[in-house]
Length: 364
Image (cartoon, rainbow, N blue to C red; front, side):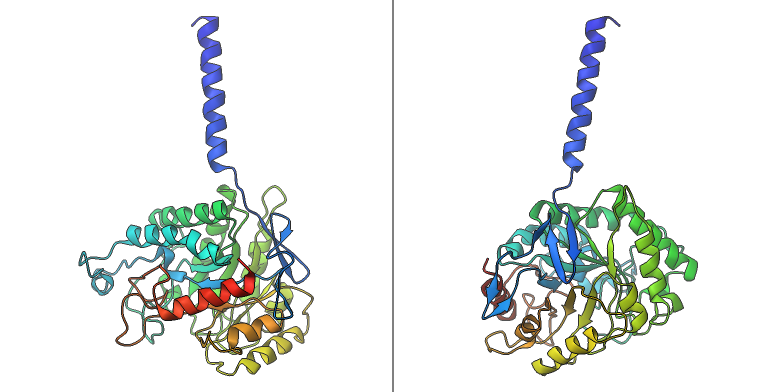
């Protein structure tokens, strides 16, 4: 090989490496200072007030947990078929999710909750025959789930959004063999996120830690151990911000408050907006609380055309709010963001009500 050929190959390698780096270079980083969120070092909704309430520093969100949904149970997968194709398609589901993300962002939605074990595709359910888990029984990662997750997180990074990623859901955690498998899953997820250099992702250990978890380490008395584990896993001085949630109307316990970077609340079952404000006040009075953001990331109360609803009540207490909606009995395909198959567009009256109020509050 002559000198010119060597130089040419060296240049080709350099530009190839640079192109590869450019494809993976990240655009979005979420951070917290005191009780406020920042994206790329700037306050969210900077300078925004609404009806006399401070909006900057909040992280308005929606529960979109089925973004990477699949069903590995051959007996139940038929329940989720699309009406046009008569079959379930996990990649179609994620593709349609990604296609709508820029639309959500245009209304001021800066975050959404995903979960690697989903949520009930019926909205609420007592038993779960389906198998929707991004992990094997030993806690290894299932590649197909993480390819779908990557598509969503890449798009969020491009758009300047900061998703909340939940790792476990009650009724699906039983698909992990034992406590070590849970710990393996936690470590593997955090390592995967670091390997992709994401810095726009917030972590929710598990959805509603006080509801029917099989593994003790996912229950209220010990879930802080997983929060601390995740916080300990740094790469180049960066770590992910971590919390967990409780069932509707519950105030977090001291162990979780002390360990968390931010606080998650759920408004399910709380029909009086004044009770939302009370929940926030009680949370701020839990021993160990220090100034940190508080978010509702699940609340299935609407009334968006009324001046006082759970969303506006949360905002009045300087707390972010998250919309949770599912397809109720005899409703059409367009309803809800949790019922599978999902219409990820803004095509129902409830969805339009939320997004229009969101746009008004955030000034987008």
